[in-house]
Length: 259
Length: 159
Image (tube, rainbow over all chains, first blue to last red; front, side, top):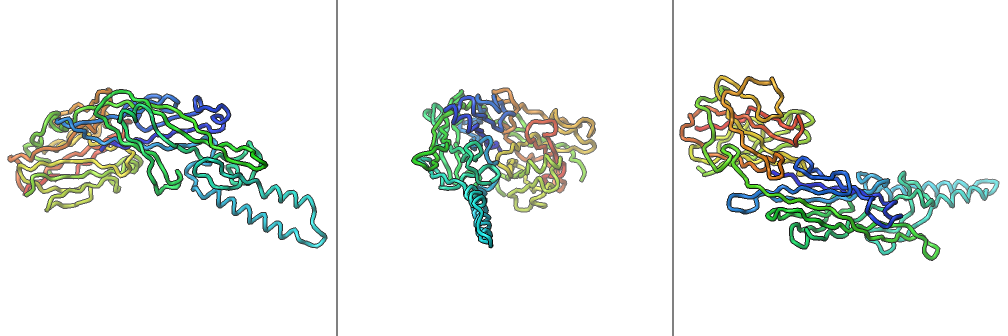
């Protein structure tokens, strides 16, 4: 049975935000090199889609594509999604404990209060972006940070897949709900019509999030960018594994092996 | 008697590649015949009747792993044929006594694609009853030098 395609799209979020383009900041990777995918690991991936058809011309293999976004420098996608929320809560608890212990004889040192103020961290409001909740700014280790250079970017979000391959109905992409919270419970997949061989480009729409100061508070502002890849469709006739052509008798030996 | 018997070849590709064997629970053979034995194991004995069509279908446990049938060769008395394919380790078996016809699985992109092969055939009337016809089932997992694994234990049996 034909395997499903996995396509990882890795973004260098920081540089993409800086340069306001995904060009030069995107790396595509799929699992179809053995059938001829080209440019694996680069920005110019051409994903091979090897279709098959029966002798009556009908499509014999359903090809399924799955896209997963990933970000350079972020918390690895395999870490559970509630990691940041848990870290945030744990950090608040620690700060409260320390605050309580400050109330000792001899008064409270101002330096201690300042230190704890820093520990409380900064909160960023969700701007217009999708899927972001208000939360503290945490670095990749889950510690509060006020440094703009150290915080952890929210995962990039695929918002649409368009282009020639979609317009010409070569593939039918859609976003599906998933029990896998690694990708926020959503993922993009498509089935492919392999009856029309050729190379079909498509455009992936991606939303990144950048932290900006707005009216005295920190806000995650969404930045919508696009990147491109292509599908190379080929199609070949199914054939019988024993005869190389149509159905025949099983090639049994005159005398079978003992056992 | 039904016209057709389906044998499903379920493979845990990652397990098989890391164990380098289709045993240890990495291969499970199941059919829909009424009298088959050892269902769910690599030792499946499928009871067949002449004229029936037998079809083998590979299924991957992990949907993003490539699992295809590279060859099905019935083992003759006396000699054990060499495993099919150029990737088989040399010197592991006697030369083929009855070389299986090798069907070209090259696709139009120039790559070997065993998804192109349909593994089905008609049970011949000359099949001897009561004797299991064991076959070598070779499974191809990806394309590397250790991609092809096989078992010699499954069989067809005419009763």
